[in-house]
Length: 116
Image 1: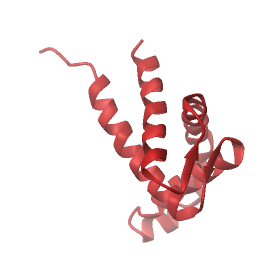
Image 2: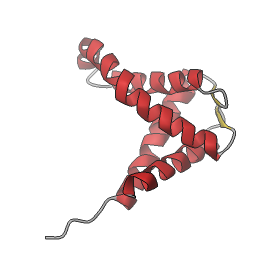
Image 3: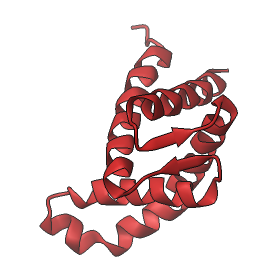
Image 4: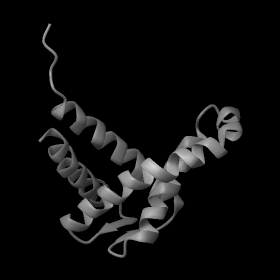
């Protein structure tokens, strides 16, 4: 149940981030859910491979190159989904930062409290 709620809130986060950024367009909530699903699959499969291949440049840039990888994942999802569009690299970077912020806030809301 908690994972379904997190998935639905990820769709909300995609919609909110697209609303805040004029360079990102999502047609409806179902597309936002599809973006959240495809982005999670891309982050599960493609992102670790990119991180592995770019370890040297990531070390040299003190981890800032991971932001570039996040933006590339957003652009890949843009390529895969027709009703989702990102105007360029910088919009994808801003979208990934805002999406991470919203998902972090929503993750705090859905996290179960540990009893001691």
